[in-house]
Image 1 (tube, rainbow, N blue to C red):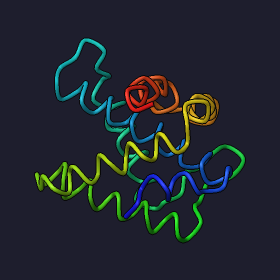
Image 2 (cartoon, helix red, strand yellow):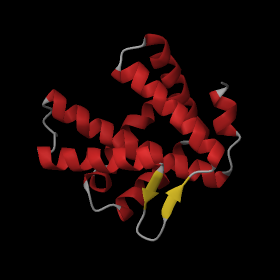
Image 3 (cartoon, one colour):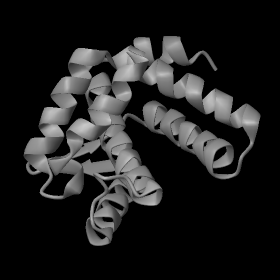
Length: 149
């Protein structure tokens, strides 16, 4: 699949939603890795679990609950996001190198497609809408994503 064209060709509204998804999932990833690595900034286990449950629940349902509305994706976008999630599970969780590389290409293309300004706005939206560790520490996800822009 041509990830770059797919993400570049999305509507502005869909890019805004993907930016929120990416900041949310990367914030969770940083929180999870900090816990596993025993980092100085690791959260207590209860907050680490809360971040994981919230983020993974939203990803599995492909619905992100904001205070005033739920974010959902267009059917084609949702199908592609599920495909990327499958690549993540196969590549990252199960160690399939080819799928890992494809996941990384898709991940980078999504970040570049939505752009830095949208990611910054997404982190603000998350911070304003989530009263959980994902909202409190949304800057973690933004900082992680900065390497791909």
